[in-house]
Length: 189
Image 1 (cartoon, one colour):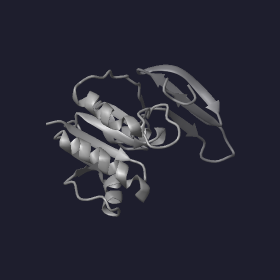
Image 2: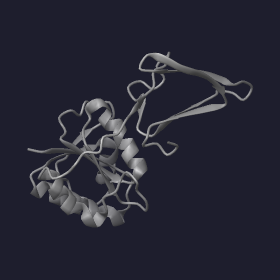
Image 3: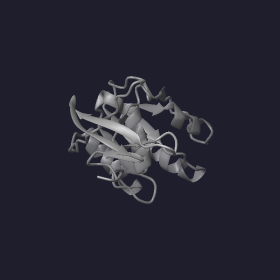
């Protein structure tokens, strides 16, 4: 049985029909559906019927998922990456907003895209992640980014010094007000 995780953006009641369509289609295909607890709370407060969904939180190990759906825009997809972590589960971005460079599947193409996914008719576009290592550990297990990291000074009276290492070797030291480190996916890259 295929297992798919879902995380989504806050939705209005007008999006309930779309979500029902997504869930109905996946259930017809006998997909086991897992939903982020944050997104699941919205289901409970809407008129969407109980689909017997399993839930997960950030930090849970989601290695058992075959795919992950992000319902929203690029921001939601970036947030979805924080759920996947190191699992390397493929993410399909369903664009329910206005503009999507990463979340490219439209509402109209959802069922067709799911069928292609379930029939293994797809390609994976691999993306690089950044990992931040700091002492003390500032972000716990959420120390990675798909887009970029912004390192800023704590107060306005001094500059920051950042020693940048790549694969354990010193690249350079920088003194500035702010430093942005970006992946090729990042908006600044």
